[in-house]
Image (cartoon, rainbow, N blue to C red):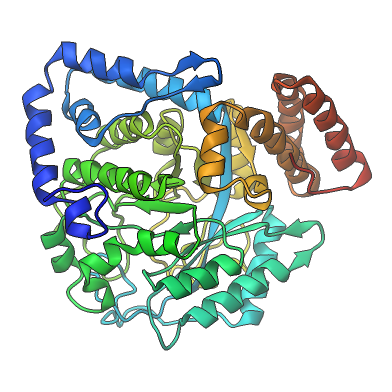
Length: 483
């Protein structure tokens, strides 16, 4: 039985409800009157408090995803762009993954870290090696990391993860500092989530991989991750442990994408109904080739056009939720979906353990990679590319350090006040990057962009103060201003 407020996985992600949703979408995918009503409901509307969006239910959004009419699809894309502009503007948040260990006791059939893979060397970073990796990332210009580790209670216990977080935050190299650590590790206990919160993490991220229970159990035949309910209920435990920013995601290509889409939105609705705040981010990775993984054995892959449509429909359904795309995707694909709703991207990424220290921007080790990286450009190249496209690369972490998380962030976002915080913060952190790390060409493009964009800060007093801060960053060597 479907119950959005239930704490049981098979009730808030009800297979019966998902299948009924797909039937409903098929029955109504050509109903132009209904589709127009859905699009109108989702459109941003000005109120006395600012701009607000109603979002869509999983059923309404599934109708849009099922529709194949080119004219409707263009309307969906146009609305996704409108919503993205209303709440995120032209800002794109930058981050990098940091792989700590590829030891794992699970047997996930799509991941090269599964314990039976003998083709990759096993590696776990020491704290000195973590330090070297962080310095390398700081020297690239990164301020925000997402740490990754396989599930192994012996090699990667929670104490190891906490030690790594402490090490990361402790390193101040030249003008560099990692100001926010997001954590992508296996489902764990409420007690361990409390420990992660106390360690000062940003967002706790956990990909569901697939919401289809039968497929999930086949894809995870052995190891603790085999437990569908324990994995699917992890976000409730994280929130019980005090982590109010959580990130959802599925691995598109494992099962039917329309099933995953509906269930993903049901999970977001569940978090909102139970905890008063939905996911802070949604990630949209696609299955990629890797060591010991044969893509030909998976037959649910999706093409770039379908992928773009999924991104647009998610943006319309959950307008206030950040969306993340990684270097799994090509430059061309990333360019398309950024405009349709993506708000965070990685740059200069390595998906191997120890992949940064000791390597030039053009070098990358492949022996411990979790997946093939499609976009292999350096961070500087990605930053300049974004600015050439009219976007503002942001290294901002201010909301987390100012306590604007969970429902407090959403409250500000829903009335449009984030623009008075995020826009100047993005420009100030971009100026830090330009001053400390950028190539001369990137610096010239960026400083021209900042000179234009600072005029778009709505609040006059904040705009004037931000101009002063920008001058101090550029000319006086000061860092880490924030609103």
